[in-house]
Structures are given as C-alpha cells and as structure tokens.
Length: 198
Image (cartoon, rainbow, N blue to C red; front, side):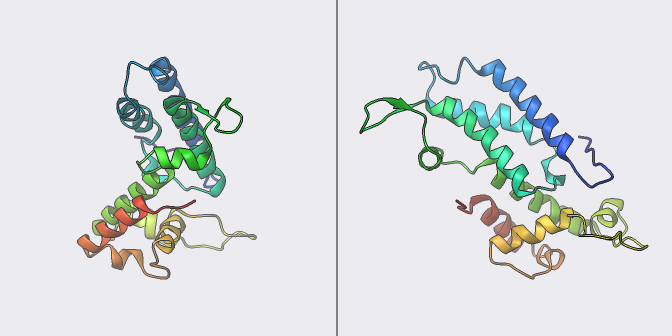
C-alpha cells in the first residue's frame, strides 16, 4: 500500500481517496444493508470485512486530527444507520433515524477511529523493534537537522502515538521503551481499541 503525504505533512487526499473507495463498495452492497433477508450480524460482517477493510488500508501511517476522526465516524455512522434502520419514536409514534447513543448501544464492535488508533499502535510496536538501522525507524523516530520553520510545529505521526497513550493513562511514557515489553504493549493496543470514548 502506498501512502501519499504532502509537503505540509497532510494526508487529507489519502483519507478522501479511502472514503471514496469505501463509498464505491458501499454502493455495491447498499441494497443488501436494508434488506430483511439478512440478519444484522451478517450486515455488520459485510461492513467490517468489506467496506472498512477497503477504507482502512494503510491507516497505520495516518495522522489524524479531530476533524478527520469526525469525518470517518460520520462515514461509518451513515453505514450503521442503513444497517440498523429507523426506529419508531415512543412519543410521536413516527419513524426516525437512530441517535448516536442508540447506535453505540446496538453496535458492539469498536468504531473506526478506535480501530485506526489500535492499528497505528500495533505498527508503532513493529517500528520500535526494527532498530535504528532500518529506514522506517529513522523516518518515524529520527530528528531532522536544520532550523524549524516559524510558527506552530507540524503535527507528527509520533504525536498521535503519544496522544493515544494519554487516552489509556500512559501519559509521558516513552512509547519506544514501552513497546519493548511485547505483552504489555499488546495490552496497551487492546486498551486503545476497546476504550469507550463519547
């Protein structure tokens, strides 16, 4: 999988392309999602094994901002609304779209942003074990020479790793050191995946 990064350290176009591919696969199966002939479990498997698989290809290298996370969640929620369908309101007795909290209750699998974060953490562990001789390690961990441009520093991939660690109460810990203990690192990856965030 090829990753495209701009000189502004943005992967906006790559995420847009991934969502476009996911939408193409969604349109191929869109008649199946509202069908009463398939169980909800089968529809969710279609969603996770086909559509999300396409969207998340190469996501381990993504730098995610809150805006990008929101965009990915909106994409996934749109699919989940199709899978679970509308709900009859107890008060108005009219059909309405499910609220986000209701989707959370019905969808027991981790959401797309959690999957991306856990995959990124898993890949970070692989990078940390590569050692300084490997090019990938030097690109991810290395410090570049020269003067930094004026203004706020650009968001780095490593910054996402540190933020993910903060979410699971590992704030300020060195991710390279943490990842050397494989069992502990796997527990952190699982915690990032299954963390319940509103």
